Structures are given as structure tokens and as C-alpha cells.
Length: 92
Length: 359
Image 1 (cartoon, rainbow over the protein chains, first blue to last red):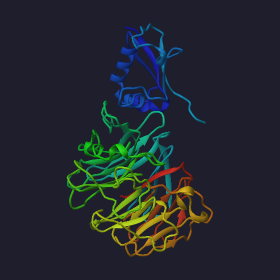
Image 2 (cartoon, rainbow over the protein chains, first blue to last red):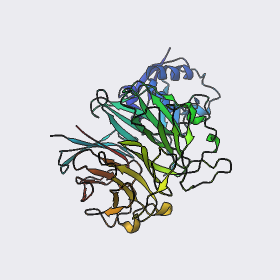
Image 3 (cartoon, chains in turn green, yellow):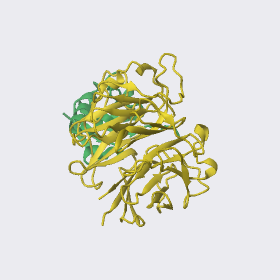
Image 4 (cartoon, rainbow over the protein chains, first blue to last red):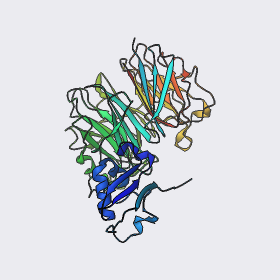
């Protein structure tokens, strides 16, 4: 099971013991995100609404791709893949 | 000698201002919870002191942080207020955190947007929705105001913990007599702002509420349409505006041990929402609202910032001290019940809330 690098925004560092770079195991995107939230449960409320939908201005990228572009989350991951959580720039 | 602490919740974090008991020499610490909009911060001293902060962010949503070391370190609550997965409502922000009655020292309430009320029975570590409010027959007709559909005021009867009042902008005041299971609108006598086709008991825009600490039947509110008093637990309200320059404003505060004395900060109409002619004044009544008079010595005459509903705080010293923050980031303080004022030397982000404690 590859260890995937995950980068989180500094505003959410309190959810990950102050760390901005995490390493989380997972074979697929879904499994990796599930493992991320299991290891750092405080992140969940900031990334997802009560309904389970990703918050509208939270962007999660797998390498260069916005994960919302994928048909599903069962995307297989390989060593060296990187997940980055960023806030969408909205407004001015 | 006691120290005095002001907790200023701002658009970009929390600031803690500390003074001596003379309240004339302040230090400023912060921003804590940097980058987060702090709606409310309250110190609960019923057990070991715990500081609660209701915070939110446009992108990352709302949550509650707790500090057990007076703000030095904070931890986010994992099981904070949240509507259920299948709820038709969404938690947009947490407006207020209110310690419950003395008899239940582990209990707290949180008023939220979309309008709802949550309760914690374990010092804020987990929260449950009081679903009777969301289930009210008028709920489908509630409309958000300029500040959202926010439940911003929660009052607990000091003699009967089962009696609770809440205030929701653009909807009105509700009272529960059974600990929050069922709710009844309590807006008789108040001018309606948004007449509703189906329910005449909603559509009232309460901006803030306070209760007489010695007589829980006496309530006061600054409303979108005026300043009101109730002498019967909210069953009916009467206007108390004699001497005020207008009816609009946000905060209203009551003296901690002279309950016939109250303070409000009028603004020019809902269209403009700034001090009339830029003349920033606090208004005081010493007769439960029969008449009001302005207090302005030391306050600016060219100030066009607003004062938000939770941005007025009153300490329990003798004489009591008053503090208010503006949307321009200023904090004004009086150590003599409003007779004279000074600006605390700092310029903060937009101030959403102030609370004060002496230790």
C-alpha cells in the first residue's frame, strides 16, 4: 500500500497536530481520504458538509487533477502521487 | 487586585485585552485562532475555567474551539454542533455559546445559522440539536435577514432552567417552557418587519436580547424596528424609546446589579447602519427604559462604523465598566458606567463580539 503525500492548508494545521505535510497509506483515492479522516478526524467538518458533500470552495487535487473531475473515488494510487487540499480563490 | 479580561472576537481571530482593576492600562494579545472569524468567545467558570470560541470560515465552515489555559492553547471540538446527514438544514455558522444554568454546570447552549439551537451536557465536547425548534410549524417560512438566518440570542431563566428564550433575526423571539422540547413565538406588541402570509406570529427581527438578572420575567430587546421591554417573560412587549435618536441598532446591555439601568447604541436606520451624523453615542436609561439619555464624553463625533449585536460588554465592578467594539476595529471603554470613554489603543479587524470577565 503506497504512502501518499498530502498537503493541507495552514488554516487547518490545528487539525493535524500542526503538520502541513502528511503521509497517509492508501491503495485508492477513496481509501486514502478515508484513512486521512480516520487519522485526523478534525479535518472532516472543514472539508465536507453535513450531507457528506465536499464543501464548495474546498479543492482537493490529486497531482494536477481536481478530484471532482473523476467519475468516482476508486482511482488507484501509486508511490509519488500527491494529494493537495487548497481553498478556492473566490471573490476579490 | 482583580484583573479584567476582554475577549474580542474579530473577523480574523481572537484578541485578549487585559487590564488592572482601574481599567485604564491595557495590554493586547493576539490574534489567537488567527485567520478564523470569531463569532463569540465566552469564559465558563462554573467548573474549572474553560474558554469557548465559536469560529467559522467562509471556506472551511464553523466549529468550536476550547482552551483550558486561558487562550494559550486551543483544541477544536470533534463533535461540535452539526445537523444530521439527512437534515434539510445546513450549519453555516455558530453565533453564540451560552453557559447553561448554575444547577447544570456541564450544560451549554449554542445558537446557530441556519437557525437552530444545540445543547451540550458535557462541557461542550459533544452537542445535540434541540429538534423541537427546527420542527416548529412555522419553520418552512423562516426567511434569512442581512446577517443570515441566525439564532444569535439565548437566555436562560435564572430561576427555572426549563424556561429558555431565543432570538432569531427576521423571525423573532421564541420561548420554551419545557427545556427546549417545544417552542412558542413571543412577539406580541412588536412591529413586524416581514409579514408572513401564513403565520402572523413570525417575521419579527430581534437583534439582541437581555434579561433582568433579578427578575427573569423582565426582558429587553433591541429590534430592527425599535427597543422593547417585556414584563411578563415575553408574552407581550412595549416600546421604550423615549429619548433615543432612532429605533435601529444592534446591542442592548443591562447593568449587572442595577437592573433598571440599561445601555444601547443607536444607529441611523437599517439603510445606513452608522451612528447618526457620525456622532457615536451610547444611550443609558436608569428607569428600565422609560427615558434614555446620551453618553458621549470621549467618544468620536466623526465615526461611521457600526456596532454589532454581540459587541457590547459590561463588567461587574463598582462602578461597572462598559466596552464596545466597532466594525472599524476600535474598542471604546468606560470605567464609570459610561460617563466618560477612552479608546483602548489598538486597531483590530472588524469586531463581532466582546465579552468581559474579572479574575
